[in-house]
Length: 122
Image (cartoon, rainbow, N blue to C red; front, side):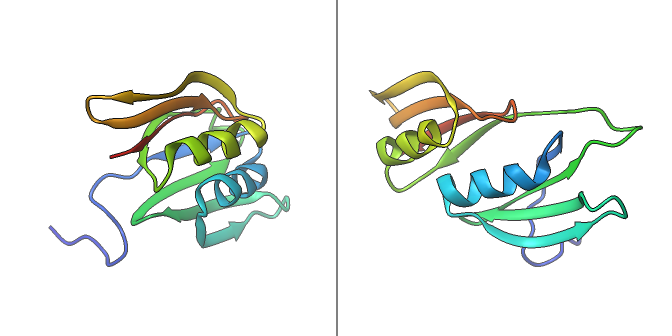
């Protein structure tokens, strides 16, 4: 199998009503880096890629043929409590406040775009 450098074997691909706002959310909460941003003729993001840690998330604005499609994502971070606060401050809804679990310090939020993030520090 030939996977291009900088990508993993499985990547989420989200269809969002406001991909531009999602970029700002992941940059603010997870220090995401924009890897690729292609704009459509309508001035909206057509294809986007961001990197969180060493993982790529691909996404696009919804279009006639593509309705919104969100995901549940599990992400390891440096400080689950701090990232949880950033996510809530950025408009996320709390699903599970930070708590110690057998696998680490973990919490959950639903972002303003309908994605659920399980945020964990190992």
